[in-house]
Length: 570
Image (cartoon, rainbow, N blue to C red):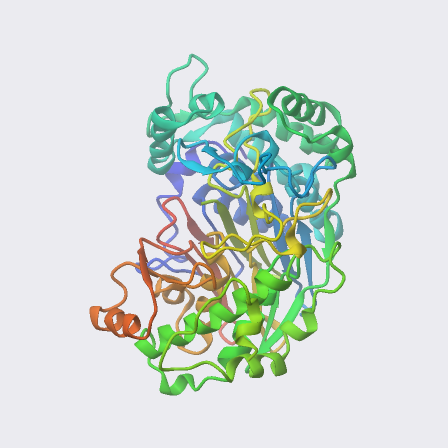
């Protein structure tokens, strides 16, 4: 079966036995919720062919590299959480690494300052997010290959082939991609991005026209035929290194050959009658999520109305404490043996943190004191569930939307700018949110700290909620609130995803909130409690699946803020 652009049309006619008029998707045999309708449909086709959740995840991820280039990627990295039908959970860490030639002060000028420049969209940003030196050693292909080799069931080539065919044959350019194209044409200083959506003749691909990516198809063919080695060795690796040398990057053939994805034990927490499985460092997501859930377990939520002043204040104070601990303690565990994971995720530590929350006024975030004070855009996510009882929660990223904006014309994919996720100035933590603590300073082959929070919530030893989101540091808090919404406020997953979200990250000391979703009276009351409020259009773009074991139903939802996303089931 050819995975042609016809999927773009077919997906507009979703089966009535799978999706109701309100947008959530119901299924019995399998479900995929991702940021691309085409990718979700391909994942479902893999499940229909007898593949398991890992097989569907691999196929979905590679298709996203074609249809969702702002974040779906083979030039970046991420994390996968897997729970099988027996309730056994594991994770795959395929976070990018710093190259061997990297150093803690590599982005500083002679005066020790972090310079600024124009990024790939023409906007000013710090130098650690710009250019080829901002590119970390990609991990996606290694991570997907490791997951498949250990837990997949269908042949690897069958899982990569759909993405190749879509790249070769093309798919109908969506409005959201067309808007990006016109923005790059007008504002990007990077020639690769200006030409990224062009046809062979040089004309811009228009909305609704076929967009073909033959160079990416060739790269994916190498990966199909040679597995992990098709990316980290051979012609693709040589072209990556050639690109780095020509553009001032520092990734070498040795970096690529030495890169490995790692299977890690998941972080496990409990909340009431539920088990929570998420990522350990170098993700900060699992630690912060479990710490915040432990704190919320101490609150009397029955007495606190959802979206009220007291609720928003409590969330902000809980987030403040978890993010202060994140800044002080977390980094790549392979380089930081003394990360106090057991302490940070313990009920006793949460009790100590909770005791000094003042429900009448905001705490103060002090850049010089970290957690001692409380002693007391782009990534994408998809969720998969199969008929066998397996579940996958996978989040991967290029860092900024479209990463570094740089790529080789011969390879057809965009490189990340993940080096910007390291602490760039040793020892300098500022009120603007820049962190300078030791655990996340740049070191060769170190994985940069991440906020990605792919999560599986289990009930009675079986997957119950499969959830995750893009959004930088806001990821942790959007996932946290969605889990709370499902468990404590009895929301179905689609309503939990769409409900009001806030974000507080300790520094800067402010609450971001989704515009128009807090009443004027609530905003006024929060400001009177010394909270600074910042409105934003949206927080996160969650993709989730909820499983009703009793009725043998899977319920999937794609965040309405993801214009090309869809939850597809059968």
